[in-house]
Length: 127
Image 1 (cartoon, rainbow, N blue to C red):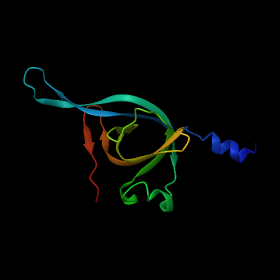
Image 2 (cartoon, rainbow, N blue to C red; image 1 turned 180 degrees about the vertical axis):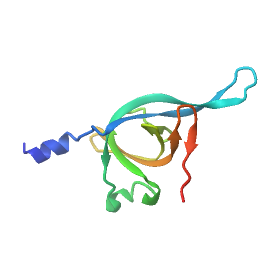
Image 3 (spheres, one colour; image 1 turned 135 degrees about the vertical axis):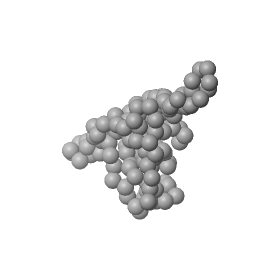
Image 4 (tube, rainbow, N blue to C red; image 1 turned 60 degrees about the vertical axis):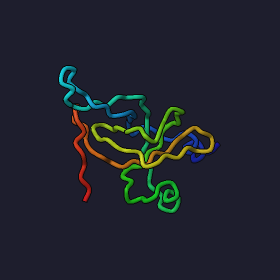
C-alpha cells in the first residue's frame, strides 16, 4: 500500500473533540421559572475539518450558503439530525449528515447558531 492510500483509509481526526446532544431548559423547582439552559451531552467524537465541495455537497444540503462547517468523524448509530453539536464554546445545528458506504465515517454539515457561555445559548445573528 502506498502512503496516499494509507492516508485516505486513516483520516486525520485530530482537529478536536465535538460533543453532540440536546439543549434542556432549566427551571426553578418552586416557581417553574426559566433559570437557564443546559447542554445535555449524549456523546463525543473526534473530528477533522473537511473542505466543502460545491459540486458534490450541494446534493447533501438544500443550500450550501447556510453551512458554516463540514466535519468528518466516526459513524455512530445513535446519531440524529435533531442533535445539537458543540465544538468548544460554539453551538451548531445539523443541516444534514452523510454516512459513507462502509458505515465507518459520517460527514456533518453544520450551521452555527451561537455561543455557549456555560449557562445559556447566546444566539448568533446572521446578516
